[in-house]
Length: 123
Image (tube, rainbow, N blue to C red; front, top):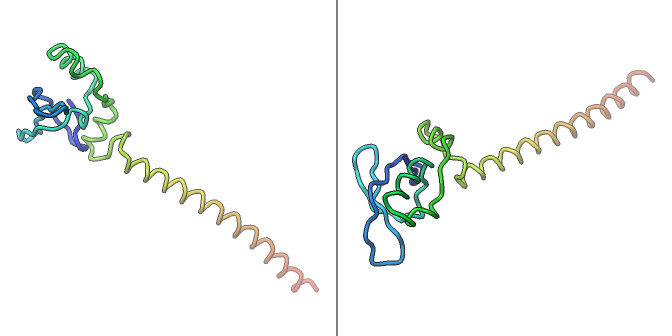
């Protein structure tokens, strides 16, 4: 299996191209086919090895997709290399840090307020 635009696909063949870009024909689970740039596809290790046997030297530089990436795609979640996922994780980390900092500041201010109230009550 392979991944193209966060969808599971199968690479069926190399497509002749008049440009320097290598093209491959991919097939979606629905049976639809599309010609896409080879660099836009990520292959599993097994599929990469199989295609390297069929087409020596054509698939050496293709990025690999891990089993975890395939599981993510099958569950409808972005794979680990997806830039949106990285941005989401960074935003979540920033939010968590801001909430923690705010909690600390509120606690410090509450302690000061408690001291002020104690001073007024215990005159």
